[in-house]
Length: 199
Image (tube, rainbow, N blue to C red):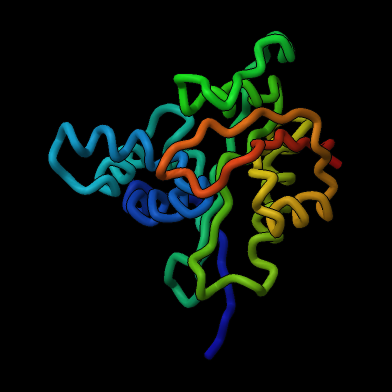
């Protein structure tokens, strides 16, 4: 069977696949809000995720997503967008592991004026063939096209495979914050802010 891949801009119709892949790439973080809203609306949390990415506006949109297809089927995606300019992080404001806001570490670790790689994921059957790396290179190309000089992402230190890949791609850990434990989050320890310069 051929494994030729194609990369294209996402459409609104891709929203459910985007939500599924974001659930994979976020290691449970994205699903927290979906579950909370789904309890109110009495629906599947994935329905909330799909609705989120059907929105043409905002950062979490199909408009900021690129789809990787194999044989015409969605195999993976890249969600990336520009972060606004802001004041540099103050380590005095680093949240603690017992912070009441489960999202506090990821808000703190935002890198101002960077091209933020919010999510990269492949369905399990398509991993191990360098496609994730291809999407990471695409993120770098997008950053350059959008006049950003820095790429940023947040990774869990316990996700050794991902951290190793990002390290190989030239990303460096510049800050970290303790993960606020939650039943849906797959990891504990620290979340790492990793950045690299756009070549």
